[in-house]
Amino acid sequence: MGEKPVYLFYSYAHEDEGLRNELVGHLKIMERRGVVRSWHDRKIVAGDSWDNEINDHLKNADLILLLISSDFIQSDYIWGNELEIAMKRHQNHEASVVPIMLRSVDIEGAPFAALQGLPKDFKPVTSWNNRDEAWTSVAKGIRKVVKEIQANHPEVDEIAAPAQSVTRGVDAPFGIDDLEQNPELFSTEETPKIFDDFDDTEAPKNISVSTLHNDDDPILLKIVNDFTLDIDTAAKQRKTTSINKQIISQSALELINNPEQKRILWVDNQAQNNQWEIAALAKLQIEVITLDSTQQALAYLADDEEGIDLIICDWSRPEALADAPSAGIKLLRALKEAGYNIPVIIYHGEFDKDKRASRHELAMAEGAVGEEISPDELIAKLAKWLSMY
Image (cartoon, rainbow, N blue to C red; front, top):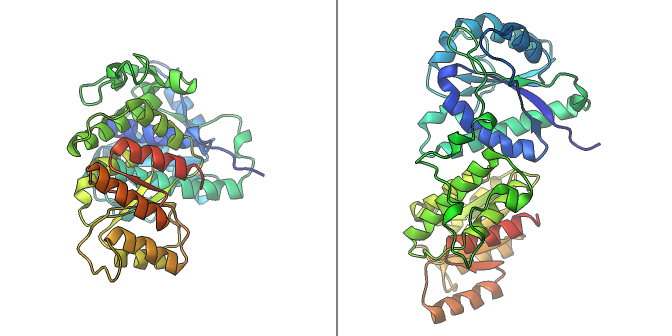
């Protein structure tokens, strides 16, 4: 029997709607992969019987996410209604409740204080240097819970009333204002549409997700937009500005459509030089572990229980090389000797044509699956190999 999607419900304060929107974007990827199904009640407006609607959806949810903040803690409605129902269903093994720490707040004595929270180490989402990495950690944890729900309740997709997401203020529901009803949320100055500035030689003007994947989804479009913007920034930082945005957007969709959440080991003693590429991958729920050396990489792989899908490695690092011509080649040889069969892409900054050709020949001879210098080339190669594993 294959996996069946789990219905989830968001419990959160209206003041945290912006953060909830970010989570919706990340869970949209899980929804697209058939992992969860998030339903938003568009009929809840001021004056409607919102309390009955909320209670009905809460009582039918498989997974209830508590988005914790000071506003959540201060909400009389959440504490007097939603939390009571959620914790009772959790205690009766009728639903799973997962607290997600949005903003730092004291939860000592709270009914959910003993539950395993997200992100990793229950570190508040807003305190992460890269918030997308925080959401990736959240999504990873949610996926584990979803698998447990699917294993224990294989009939979850037959539930008559799927869970809904509602928006409310501190003391009462405020009315629906979800992302799918407000595509203008995706046209801010911070996340402009990037598809309108393609070169004519690259792709048609005004390209959209519909053009790329027969899908009209503003949330997905925002994800692809933001991903492409990060890769474009990475290219400018590396002085390779003539990137192919069509390739980037298509690669993003290919990665989004991958049914499994992927993990990458990135070995580079100057990880800050790759911050934009790493930030872009986090937007697609790809977990990236950064390490400085061959020794650290081998030690990590020896202890890792989750598995690494792909390794990205620089060419040169300040470490003992033995008889290897570079640190990158040293890692390739060490992986082979240790019996690891993980695809490796060499990502470096040698733009001289002849010198790059020499590195390419040596890297491929030693077992690398690719050698790249520009972010769009890297992403395209990465998408290809991750889709194979």
